[in-house]
Image (cartoon, rainbow, N blue to C red; front, side, top):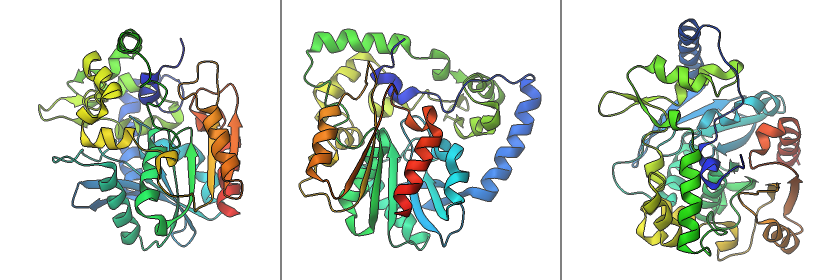
Length: 341
């Protein structure tokens, strides 16, 4: 099955494995997750939300902040953290609105509000400037931070996103084409990840089929209790992006001005949309595949040629969007080399 536009946002984290004893593994992972959060987790109360984040390494090292992809969370960067910290890189990873343990604000917010929250987090951590990067939707949010706080941005790292508008390749399609296309995406989504569960263990068991056993404790970072006391994984997140039904999905693409403030400010964002020249070193990591969900190869190339002194452009062929998962060694090496240069 081809990687769809919707599955860009729904891709399970890491790889596939199954625990022998779910109940036993659940208890082990509960403790491991609690201990890990005590060692690496943090919270910051901002005017918009109570922001959850993770840190690793020497706080006096080179600061690097990561923004995860859609329906992922701050643990996304975990598989390469050791390689980063071994090179004196201080890693910060944020759960942005509605993901992981960070609640979506009660009032309407834009990507600019999130940039403000990240700026406040850097102040809290006593960091003046940071290399900020992100994957997919997170790359666009990194772009938003750079747009609002260029003076706090040392460099940008964009993993398959952040350059052209997120729906750039779809908004020129007809409404009928989009309707059929989106119907296919909704039918192909893993329905079991969008249910309500009566217990945390039940939700954990569902996620266990999608998570490498080495990282199964991170299952707990995806599970939250809703207002009805039920446990959910992704059940309430797709509504944040107007992807919860076909009509809203189509409207979000064709008329983003009618969607939520956060969604429309995100959809219209990208480095090519900024009304000023690039001023910081930028690592562009581009995934290319036969059914590329973000087919912007010519735009990436043009952007690189227009900024030869600032842009490092790496292409990962036969790769469907998730570069760090398909090529963890090359990804880590590329990021480390770029940060240290």
